[in-house]
Image (cartoon, rainbow, N blue to C red; front, top):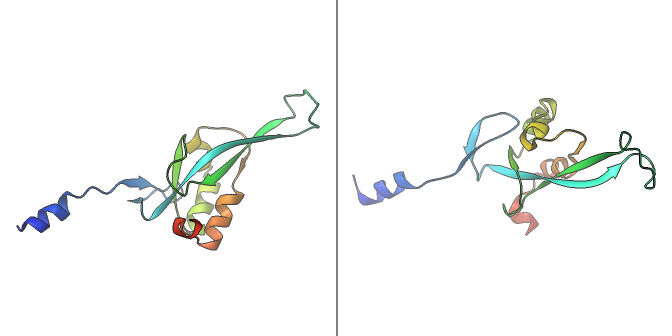
Length: 119
């Protein structure tokens, strides 16, 4: 074998699993999302009733792959997003319970945006 062929074979490319379709792919084909803890929804702000007030967590796109915390990977298509929602994969991937806001991710997938477009 030629030296160039050996170098090509030894290049390591990170592989991740899409939480929607559960197939593995390189990180260049997937995008990363992270969980951001947000405000509380429920009764008025002065109300101390913890049962009626619950924390809403927001899932956001990690454009630069630098956000802290647990991350999950997803293909950039609506099919994988719908499968992940149907399977409750976001709750499982982030190990959380309660309401999760996916509006940022839905908008990102709907526009077919790329991380380079955000920069």
